[in-house]
Amino acid sequence: MKNRVSKVFYLKAEKLGYGKDGFLDEHSNSSETQTGASRNTSEKAAHPVLKRGHTETIERLLAPFRSSMNLSDTDQTAVKFHPGEEGNTSYVTPYETNLVIKGLDLPEGRTFLTDTTVLYPGRRMNAVDYTQLAHEHGFGPPNTPPFLVADGLRGTDEVEVSLPEKWNLPPARLAQLIPAADNMVVISHFKGHLLSSFGGALKNLGMGCASRGGKLFQHSSVKPRIKKSKCIACGVCAQHCPADAILVEDTAHLDKEKCIGCGECLQRCPTSAIGVSWNQEKDVFMKRMSAYAAAVVRSTQVSVYINFIVRVAPDCDCMKDTGAFLVNDIGIVASTDPVAIDTASLHLVNNATPPPSSPVAQQANPGVDKFIAYHPSTKGELVLEYAEHFGIGTRKYELIEV
Ligand code: SF4
Ligand code: SF4
Image (cartoon, rainbow, N blue to C red; front, side):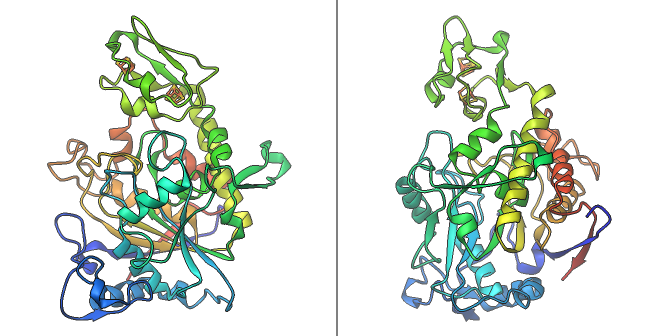
């Protein structure tokens, strides 16, 4: 696999017409085309039909994958995506999702959107609230195909997928709907992440397709540390800790035995008193996430990976606040190789010049890792190295502009 070179097709953002705000102009009275997902033109004001110019452009990007899908009349296709945490605004929109569905010609009635529940408190912790939130963000009929939570009501619907003995890891615990699908299309928003540096196709597979138990296994090596000199004993971390692992007295104290490594306290602390002890744990976390990505690829037919490198936020779509973008919109890439597409996406971001509003505007030199500039204790390259090691792709790619 290491010597293989994978193709990554690249559509620049300006060719699709992304505006300065990072979004496509969805509303227009002219040049429209209908989608299976939004045929009712009376819905147009709230749920616009796709503009013909957009569909023709995305069809050019996805043509090589559309022609090789070979779906049977009974195949059910899962579109793995992330509908965004409550308050987040940078996630891949229903309109962009429908563009992909139209571009791949996925059949109405046999296509569904899917994601899994999360470990931290919020509206994505159980399937009922999560489905409601996804609908509030515009996902589900009549806008898009139905949204199904892949790991059931409370994240416990799972199947175990054995991994090769030499990997020395227990079976991967995947969300039940993932291997059950006959075919999968993986749509990822490429952006930063406080634990894995960046998130793209591999994180969408490895973490995003795991059941609650699988997520816990991946996170369990990541324990935060508390800088007592910065702690103001506000108690916010303890209030949000789902494992009751923090006691706040004169400062916050962590019970490492109870901690499940969800990272919620890092996100909540107002003084940045909580960090991750990466020296020992980063390898384990990245290795496990990559192994889970490999488990998905080994158990599920994935037709294509599509990364939206637009609205490149410093943190993931699980965050309520999006923050200023690291770089301007770059475009959309597509590939059959999850390692190559994430490698290409990372290089495209790192070679971009950040705008003055970017939190990493001072790190303008091409090639400087913009995600590490924002999350200095992370090393995103590790997930690419491990995924290549586990045989699901290559870091060598050919970028083909369409
Ligand atoms: S201590 Fe932090 S990382 Fe550990 S379980 Fe609590 S919130 Fe999550
Ligand atoms: S949230 Fe931060 S400042 Fe507040 S108690 Fe926890 S560690 Fe200390």
